[in-house]
Structures are given as structure tokens and as C-alpha cells.
Image (cartoon, rainbow, N blue to C red):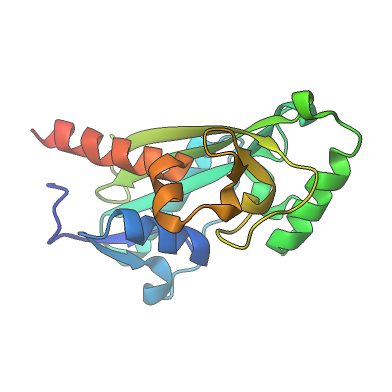
Length: 202
């Protein structure tokens, strides 16, 4: 299947922030969130970003009968042995808000010096032509940074207010959407994904 602007793709996510970013990066494609088909989000039972992304892509493709793109991403903090990791969206518990998660993260890192607050956002993107696709396309992006002691900025979502971007000397939440998409783990993964799909189809 050719990954073309005329092909409708279902996005396996209910996260409004993710949907907005992905639709902006793939603006030339017909991206429709699975919520438009009344598809419930799949239970993320995997222990890795790759496993969860495949679970979500398969679920969306199955229920929408369309090719699907799924993203699984999160924040990995070295001082916390990789936490919050795959449970980044529910770090403070099931149904936790972004603010709840950020507050818990800052509490967990209280007293940790700046040099030890290294972290990275990781994103895995999966593309499946159908639910039984035996050869899913998998791409990943990594965005290195540091965790701040307090929240800064009003843009973005999730952990953006406490993620320091060394190259721009500001928090991710202080970046414009365009600049963030050019740097972020999700932007990297999406660009890699489109290239991999083109290579597979050539």
C-alpha cells in the first residue's frame, strides 16, 4: 500500500495533544483519529513502547478497517531508573491529569542535583496496513534534555513544562508548535516512519 496523501489513515490515539501534533506534522495526509469511528483505546499491556504501539495500531486497524498509525511515547528519567517510562501518561495513577503526573515527577526528583536530572522523551511509531499485517513499520525518535525544578511555559502538553531543551535554552513548553515538532521525539519518529514506508514501497 502506498503511503499517499489520498489514503485515509486512522490514528490510534485519544490524546488531544498527540493528535494535534501528528496531524500538524502529517498535514498533507488524511489523518482521522480513531475516536471518529467510536473506537475505544486499546489496553496498553505491553512492557515496552514498541509492544504498546503495535497493540494500539492493531486495535485501530481492526475496528476501523483502515491502515493505522499508532504512537507510544513517554519520558525516561535516568535518576528514576527509567521511570515514568511506558506509564508516563498514568504515572500518578489511572486517570491522572498532566498536572498530576508532573507534580509526582517533581516530588520524586526533589533534592536531585541538576547534573543528575538527565532525561529523554522517547517515541515509537508503528504503521500497519491492516490488523494482521505481519510486517509493521516501526520508527523511533529520542529527544534528550533535563528535568527542571519547576514548571515553565504554557505550550505543549504532558511533561513539556518541566523538560529543559539544552539546544534552545528553554523548556519544551516555551517552544512554538513548529519548533517543537522540528525537534521532538514524535517529529523525529514520524519523519523516519514516512521514509521507511516509502522505502518499503519502492
